[in-house]
Image (cartoon, rainbow, N blue to C red; front, side, top):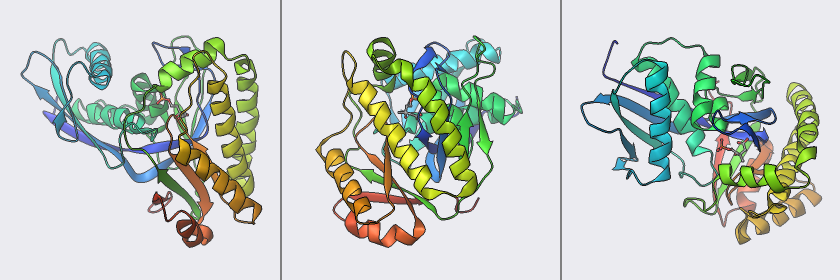
Length: 321
Ligand code: PMV
C-alpha cells in the first residue's frame, strides 16, 4: 500500500440508448447493452481514506450521511465487495463524494460517484486495474457507472456470462465537437422511486418488456452508424424514441412509475413544437423529471432563448478531449 488516501473524478454519463432491466440484481447485469455520452468536467470527485473506526463513514458534499440512508447502505455494500476482492479484512474507510451537478435528480450522479470511487480505490491500493476491470467494478455499485469510467461515447456490452466477466463498457472513439447536451433542471431533489425499483416492476409486469431487447439492438446499430457519420437527426431521433419507449414501459407496469412532472411535459411539447418549426432539437430523459436536450452548437443561442425560463446547463461534451 503506497498511501492512506486517494481521490478521483468521473463524469456523469447520459444514455442515448438506455439500460432498463437487470438479468441479475446482485451483480447489476443488464438485459441489454446500452450507449452513452459522458459530460466532460461535470461529475463526481470522490476521495477515499483508510480510517481507524468501527464502521465506514460516508460524506456527501461534506455532510455525514446517516447509516439509515439508502445511499450509505449502497456505499458500504460496495466497500464490503472491495474488502473481499482486495483481501482487506476489517479495514474501514471514509468516503467523501461531491458532485458538481444536483444529486439524485435522474442526473446519473450515483453512476459518476461509483465510477470515481472505483478509480480512487484503484489508486489507493495501486492495483493498476485496466479500464475494463474498473468498468466491471463500478458496475457493481450502480449499473450505469460501468460507462462513467470513460469520456465521450461509451458502449456497455450486456455480456452473457452469469458471473458478469463480459459485462463492461468500452469507449467508442469518435468525437463530435459540435454536439451539445443541455441539462434542463426542474427538480434537484431526491427521486421517490429508485431506478432499481422501477426496473424491477418493468421486467416483472410490463407486457411489452419482451420487445425491449430487440428494440435496443436495432437502436444501437442505428446509433453507432449515426455517430460515425455525424448524422445528427438520426442520433437525436433515436435517442428521443428510445427514452420515450423506456418511459412508456415503466408506466405500463404494476405499480407504474411516472418520473415526468408538469415542467417535463410542458418542455417536451415545446421541443416538438420547435422541431415542427425547423429547429434541430431532441431530448432524452432518465429516472427523474429533468430533460437532457440534444442539439448542435449552431443552435445553442436560440435554444437558450427558448428555454430562458428554466435552469439550463449547456455542456460542450468534447471540449478538451
Ligand atoms: O445505473 P442505474 O441503476 O442508476 O440506472 C440507470 C437507468 C437510466 O439512467 C434510466 C438509464 C441509463 O442507461 O443510464
